[in-house]
Image (cartoon, rainbow, N blue to C red; front, side):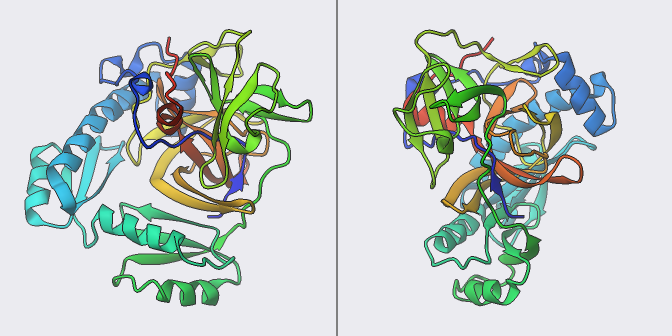
Length: 366
């Protein structure tokens, strides 16, 4: 689906400074300090109770390690991993028998794939470097279906098909999904903890870092003033991330739950495709869903943004900058999306670890 910029972003990094290192997760630590309201929201979304939600978090933490091991042992044949939380299964796709056998030994259920993840990402990069028609608002890699999904707005089928044909992609590597919504940037931007920019607009705090907080790049430019401090760095489009220094205020390692409490942040271990995640935003509060893909690209009116997390978590204008969590692990900040929280939608998030690495920031935990 097409995406609308909700007003939050984070940074991308070429290197990973020591300051960017954050605590890793483990099955035992996965539920430590997780806010009761977040667990209740997860439970409602999963159709279980709080104990069931805690069990899912433990599984996700253990699955993250399995996914990392599979990626390491599969080499060039690796085609991605995803979770089935209902059966507590980690699936791993690979293009060779040897890699699938290695994945099984690592604890995953092997799945045959025609295209490696490297090949699909190279195809996505080739697409991004081409003159993409307006009929295509976004694209992303579906590891379960082992293809590159190209979203197409209504009436743009032929233009999109003609363009895709110029990519010379292998058979079955690209799939067109029609009926996407055209992207746009929301004029009113707020989410998470609200703050004002230049006394003209509002955005949201993504996550607290030492000396300030991270947020969306389209919220402001370097030098812009905010309620709590000043933008020190910003990038949008291409990326959608920024950070604000707060010399006269004290950031803390938690996220508001908009119910009178807060959720403790314990680290920033990335969850796998299929994992349940929950979003906090000032317009619609807490909402949960699943990660659908990583490294997604979205074309906003201002330009393309790549490297985003695609989810089926809903969001609405004003939820910009809200925090995305997998249990107590920070995942990203709200970038944009389509749909709403009445009928459902698609929302994209900028990964939090990218901004930490880019600016050499340290995530605050509690």
